[in-house]
Length: 200
Image 1: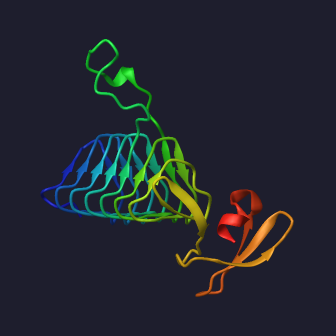
Image 2: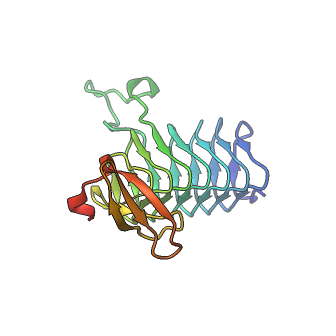
């Protein structure tokens, strides 16, 4: 389903069951999987890759260089950037062209959720089922199941697949066992993923 006001390049690929709502723009070479939802005013740049069952809320900007795996949630007004050294002009005053900068990559892994108005800087990977708090500015990689928020975003805990914050169960020699207080699912998080003094 593509709303009549959406602008979808004929060179984009849209998977079966994907819904593209009002005033969405999807550029050439973009590939979207099955059963995605793109809310009003979302922008998907050229050659972006998006998996199946992804929810992209109103006003989200997904720029060239981004890859989004299956089951990702991008809240309203999220921005995935791609330029670490942004300038409109070169040192000599000439307008920058495509050849005058290096595209920064962003990878958002399966099941991750990014809260409203969060900004993800280039060369960052968001781990599987991680959760980024609303309004955060993410400058570094986020581990699988990691909970981060703030500006700059800092790791403050870990979350379950159901999005509840995990509780510490047992500290081992190389992993920390954690448990969801809601669904009782258990996880083993490598000690190298976090600072026990901060999260414990």
